[in-house]
Length: 245
Image 1 (cartoon, rainbow, N blue to C red):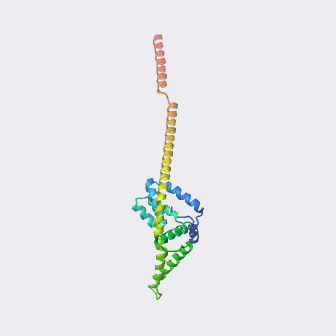
Image 2 (image 1 turned 45 degrees about the horizontal axis):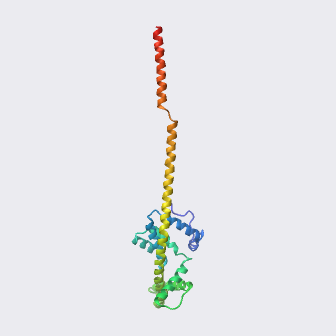
Image 3 (image 1 turned 30 degrees about the vertical axis):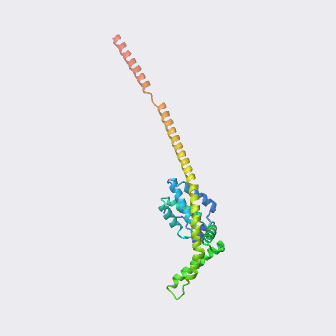
């Protein structure tokens, strides 16, 4: 198959590369920037897709970032592939900062006291996920479900994260849109100019080849003159023979 790897990655290697790419995050960021600029679409559509991907990356919809970014880009008539690439903003390096700022901003807007560290936030996410699945399995066993912990997690962590992340996502998305749009416009204009110059050079080179071919070809006027001279010489020879006779 064309898109399959020749050497399959193990689960451990795939997980490790998800946390830290083989070439490092800097190289991955440059690659994503290069791919975004070269997308074959209108600049404003690509910029809308970037807005959608950046916005979704600030929300606590973990596991739904790709689907959410694609849906939002579709609603905004943006480039869906650009939205998927822009979710790269949310990665294992930036998520702790996004979560900390989002939860703190949301708690401040809701009037909740105290500040939570990124470690506390992700620990609460882990405990809430485990508690949720334990409550689901308790429907098929004799275990007792405890929804009060999830209710406290929703009010203390998830709702503030959702509110603060929504505001931060709007700010980050708008900033990304207005930063990326002129960059993409300039890149596509420069690329089009290079393509036009390359085409003009090829046409000029082709014209020179045709001119050289025409200059080195046979000359019809010379052939006609030489033919007339030969026929004149033949006629003069015939006249001499008739005179002698």
